[in-house]
Image 1 (cartoon, rainbow, N blue to C red):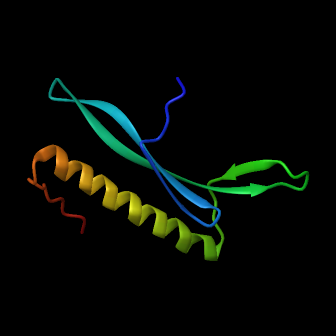
Image 2 (cartoon, helix red, strand yellow):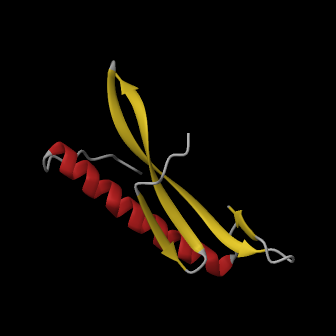
Length: 91
């Protein structure tokens, strides 16, 4: 299956893609969004490659892309629930 991301965010050579994943919750199919982050670069032969490791400066680009992805996920969840937003304690 060659699924396409529902959204993509890019900063420099770092990008984040949002993917729709079907899950079962109490016997009901639901769509969950998940993010993947990668860095594109050319190797010594000039071939494009992808990596999931980041240098010090690239970490900030990855954070920026992930923040944009998180905003999009929240927008989608809010739209699906009709402005009813569930809170999740993170600390």
